[in-house]
Image (cartoon, rainbow, N blue to C red; front, side, top):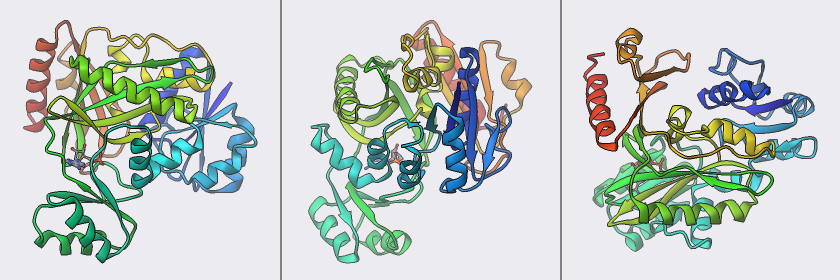
Length: 364
Ligand code: AMP
């Protein structure tokens, strides 16, 4: 049984690594050669919108899923009659547009921050007047890892932000002085079976995820996040893994965004949960029973960004798991991650803080 994956980055690579023990095969589609996933599975190379390549993917695969959520929905709609595409395209369309995403949260009574669409300079002035400062101006489409965003702190920042981003549809939203950030990873199978992972606490730096700790013990917040997750999964009759990112302020959740796919904040599940998010995504889109999502111990996952630390120095820590995505180093690029698992949350937090410091100061 072959699973088609559009996008052949590290998420696709880790899906393949999780799927081989289940006897699955994989076929990727990506615009670049030499991708992280192409190092272990066959790949069709060309544009994500190339009709011939998409048709071939549909012909050769039981189901087609995604490693990258910004694949044009129209291109996938073309193959949806020839094969099954999961997650559902309406979920993908909502996640590709920050305005549609916020509208969905509001419709499903999931609290989110004040926001307004900005299509002109006059719209921006109106949005800033209505929502106030500070705020964040974001591109509605194709933003990731903090790209395509500008924080507006004073009136003087408005012009510069407009100059930087003003050529495309935008969203202006209230800046949230959050206490911390969390994400929840949920999974729904074709059969309707639902499971959620323990809550993740996430630390971002320059818009990029640096550290995830899970399970994060915040029972009230976690319960609310689970309720919100179930609403989104049910709304779309969803199949696969879905991630929702939230800000936490004074014990309350404010939804930031969702990703219709396996997520960086769920990488710890490879070693830190009974069944990884990657395996459960595959089980879900194939209509197989889901595996247990319980944590095994207390995990911390640190991203390796920009340059790879010394492999031997990392592995000298005998209870650390290294994942190298096989990418060429480039500033700001996610090249790999490490996960450590401990018997208590306190010990995990101490080790994670020490390791983050060593990696940041290039002592490793
Ligand atoms: P995003 O691409 O929207 O997930 O933004 C990346 C990161 O920027 C978030 O995880 C936050 O750390 C920060 N950020 C984004 N939007 C806001 C906001 N409205 N208020 C405060 N911080 C934000």
